[in-house]
Amino acid sequence: MLLTQAAATAAGESLNPVMNLASSEFLIFRLGKEEYGIEILKVQEIRGYDAITRIANVPEFIKGVINLRGVIVPIVDMRIKFNLGEALYDQFTVVIILNLSGRVIGIVVDGVSDVINLDTEHLRPAPEFGGVIDTEYIIGLGTMEERMLILVDIEKLMSSSEMGLLEQTGK
Figure: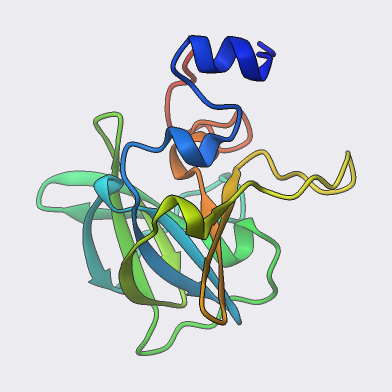
């Protein structure tokens, strides 16, 4: 549904998805040389990369599952999902356990750096690339000094038809 800025403002929403975030605190993680941020409220815990049970006939970016205190958790390798080259697993590789709409999902990243509180003056809308690059899951960019953070709508990404890990909502 398309909203004009006037209709969005009247409805108490902003056309800029960055301004509609529940929290302005982000967990910052690395994939290659780039830094990404996800809302801290969606993070349940951070674990070291450990043995994962492979599942047959799943997309390559789904590494498999782990048993987390009796809960079977699907694990997604974000480097593979974002086509960022071969995933190398070392002592810095971690799994971020997310709680998204009551469903527990893990994502493999190259490393976690910190939690940052971004004020509105540090948030920028995602750039428009036309149809060339899919930026549907990028909610904006965070800027802090010399750092550029790519802010990801992790819930939207995990509920996409391609991922199918969460129920799709009417959003």
